[in-house]
Image 1 (tube, rainbow, N blue to C red):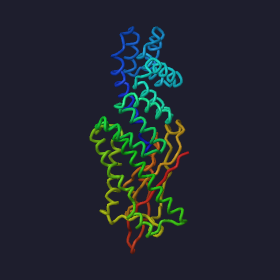
Image 2 (image 1 turned 90 degrees about the vertical axis):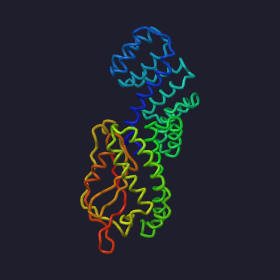
Image 3 (image 1 turned 45 degrees about the vertical axis):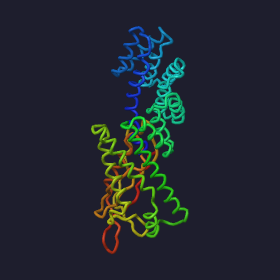
Image 4 (image 1 turned 135 degrees about the horizontal axis):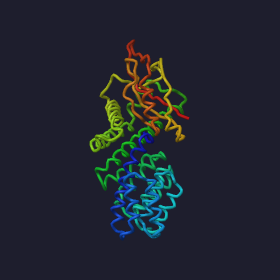
Length: 353
């Protein structure tokens, strides 16, 4: 989950960041030649290559124009000239070293380039200059979550929401951070069983039911995700998140003991998988060199299918979605108790190289 939707989130952050920074800085700048205005207009229209040409001309005419350098940096980044984009944003920072948005912009650019540590560093500089800079809290949170620092990411998301309580992207980050914490705590529990050199038995499962406080993380995760979906009902990816909301709610209810028909999978209560396909690599993921593992918490249902698929660890570029598609195609013989089929909860993993 942590990496599956980050790119979508960042697109919104990108456009709101540009708008916010322009309103914060552009109005404070003295009027410049029309070439700069044309370059900024081209940028907002999505004509990035043309914007680069115009803005390069603008900064050539006036080296001290912050806005021209700022928009040139993002225009360069959008056309793939990453090194020159970094130089342009550094130039903008040198012109306004005490202006928080330029550090936010630097952090955002580093986040897109997977420089997570650099993103956190510059986002924190922005917050130091402007404690109300909610987008910098958000950027730092995304970067920390990528580094598997889920608790710290949750703190940043909550800081952003204190400033702007209807900040949709921070609500989604909060959900992902809580799910990250859930995944980490659950892994610790399973690891404790492995250290004992045994698979989880029925007594272990009973112990998990009694002492699984990490399941309490699912309720606030579902609440923040529900709030996000209400704010962004028509957003790209809404179907995915709606399905995840239902799955999170199911496991939260199950942990409270409301569904006795589903048992934890144990070594003496296991389904037998009859048919399973590999999850297919996407062209986008292959081009980007994405590798890793998608982990899913699922119900091996008593009717021989997979239900309630909840992503506990995701990957970007469509790999999470491909894993879910593959999981839905699984067919199995359910676990049996007292001669009757029973639904059990367990995990599935899909690894991509």
